[in-house]
Image (cartoon, rainbow, N blue to C red):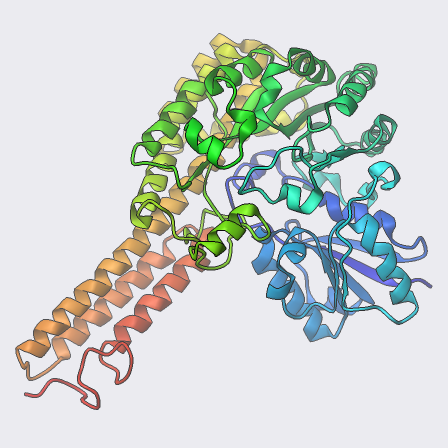
Length: 587
């Protein structure tokens, strides 16, 4: 009997990317299956008994771990907290844990409790670990960071997951990117030379998905799908034929650099193959900043015209935007808002700059003495703590960032961008297929949930105008409405959390001021001050309990910090405002 291996994919926290609040409209639990671990599963020995546990779909218990001989996990930075829970359960059960993926590869020294690290790309390092493990001689770390030929990468084990749990499917065609943006860790992880699978490989993986009953949205997860244009040009005609033979079962979306707009033939090929959306890193409308951060591919054309050119071909543009660059001035917030609305980009992922480990940005900020701490890894919806000292005042940067989010994801503004996109975007081939049951379910759920929401009027105004404008794009129209619900909910939760934290800080300062007055006046008793303090603490606790449950962890930490600070104002020692050894001011 072979080894019992448990493959665990840590939970993704709710972020703008997670689609946490849109998935219930489809009756799904997670956006995508864990493609990396499913590929790792295909590399394990054939006689092993393998189980996949996606914590975004179901929780992990101690019994799950105890039933395994070996636990393997892969994590991104944003999954750090969930990974810590996986490590704790493995320690409690006494089971060996193998960890890999972007987070361990970049931050191995920050992770305790892992028995074996398999860092870099699995095709290089996993076979070495498996050979040593089966001989009982596995080492603590395997770290060959060379970049393998993907022609020998096995197809993912999609049979290990239930497709009914997921909003869409995922495949990979290439790894690596030819560009060298200062803040990006992709080239550090996967190199500058984009490597690809063969078209035959990619189509064989599509066959696995199709034969397994997968249909609908499919994310080609490449960090820059057009990084190796020669190979992409080989793939697209074959992909178009495959789709046409099966009546276009999949609508593809991917990531690419904005210079896609200059290649009309490539865009036409993507549309013919069934691509309907592309995420592009726009970052900032400031050309000087683009040059300074190494985003040369965005410096040679009109950014707004490029976005419109891609949309006109029938590809929705989702955009990445960053605030906090050294070149940002006070007007950057209004410029970002204006660009996003003029470009008609509904899905605008606006983030704070983060110095990711191993990047050129991280190295430069370290050399300049401006690095402050770790990295949130992209989750800017819970803790807006910068890990570096920005050139702009930090308070101004955070206030401006929150103002951009509040504007961009105000329902009326979002729906206006959706209508602008519908006016510009050429109707896609995938729009002509028959509407399926999950899409009907999403539509009726949308009607019920969004009609009776606080933005119900804006929703119906958008829906009626959009259906009159492009009646044959009903699926796209409803999809944008449902995604909007997710964006609105995330934004409201974030801003409410930040208001709560601001109120705690004001309350803390108020308590300090009142206590100073008590001390100066030689009050005979602190009873009134203590009662006031206790009342503020209880009010803060009540407000904390009313926040969005997905933001509760961060809110509770802020509350506990406030409560502790309030109690220490009278306790002897650091933080106290009373004389050392004194219980109260002298009467």
